[in-house]
Length: 280
Image 1: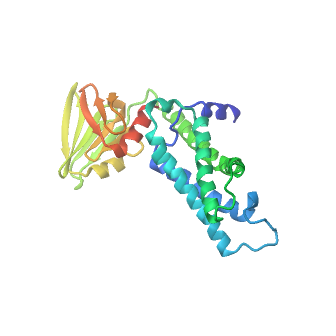
Image 2: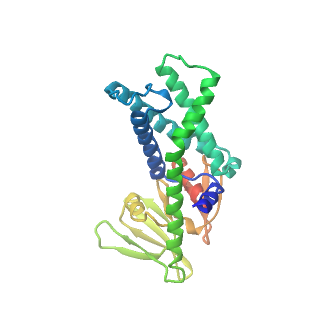
Image 3: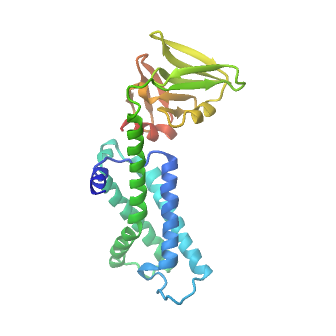
């Protein structure tokens, strides 16, 4: 456990890579905050009395605290982290973890004083808030990160069991189920939407082949979930195994697919996920 934690803390950010991972992190942190504050009432939030009944008003206030946690962490992950310059991507997990605690404590401090008509607005109180919020948020965030790290480690171990075996085939089926194409995952380059069809570009007989199939890019993307083939643009799916180089940043990323050296654009909404995957 100790070695696992040391290894985890030495890995570079970003750690959450998909919206699903971030949402799980946000919701679990918000629920934990609501439950912990409501039933344990730490830090004098309600002058805890074991015989005191939890009122609906108090529960609503604690629920709003949980909502603020979700919103704050969401802004931190989807906003601040994605605006970081590339050089800061070398930060370690513990550095980002510390920043998250500071940012969350600052937001909660302002919200707490807003609810209390600014009755506790002082530097001393602010420092105490940082300590309290760090103590409150440490376990849900750390558990989320360890769970995520465990899942990725298990996935890598499982994938290693198939080394040397025949490469898996990706099967594409048309909407009417009449057309079907099976391509090795290592031979697929990318898929491009063309009106009501999708053009599948793949390698066969040492040349680049194109196969048109009547299907939506959205459906194919869903069927390819869990593979190296990811949505990178409203009109493209790309096989990250075939990406040789990429250039640009989150506002203008372009992938070069080898060996055909075809340039595939990346939309801003998909750029962070693609760069995260390529940096692994």
